[in-house]
Length: 282
Image (cartoon, rainbow, N blue to C red):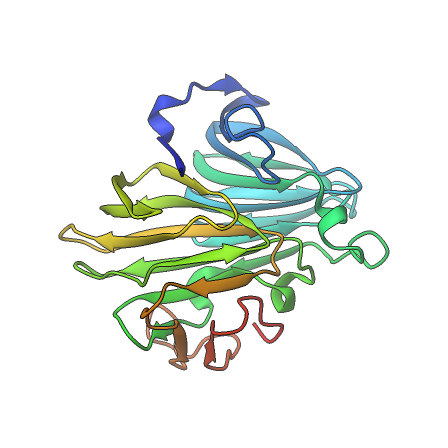
């Protein structure tokens, strides 16, 4: 059965100067998980250390506020971050995340990333920061959902992890399915709804973490008066999606726009999840 809990049930611990960390996904809470997930609360004038091991990779998404990412190993380069920025941290990254006015950050790490992507150490990808609001929006062919990719081979140069943001307008539901070859989890950003794991329903709301094991059937229904939005991640990022008998195979259609309705910073072609869910062109 899926493992689910709300971040409010997880205590905080000091992490750097003026920073509190909640350890959401851990090996103790989810035995054998390849993905570690933290939520960081940076106070005004705070500084958090950021260090990625030589066989690991890291990723974080700004949830609110502003911060500065400093790449100490890369010549002390400073990168200004707002509430729509996403950062990919390659193996061996060493730096700091500081905030003058406060910020909230979702931080994920894959400690065994080199085992999931053999090229990760020999051909390490660079540090990269993107603004998800400028990324292409894809529309679901069979329902009202929208998808924005956050971690893909084309964006960050690795298949060790894959991530995306999914937006469910009120009343939207998706088809029942499962994945083979990867574990995955969702972090609920906004709204609420009903999740199903192996046909067993349970409620979800903002701040929830939902973890699914390999082969566990699942789908979501948005039942509130606002969009239900979550980010989801897979490790490894190359896997197979299997749809329940009679279910509509998910097909994502290119819109040629970002979430604000403007031309996006890159293009993604329409594609189907019929045979795979790790497309190199995204």
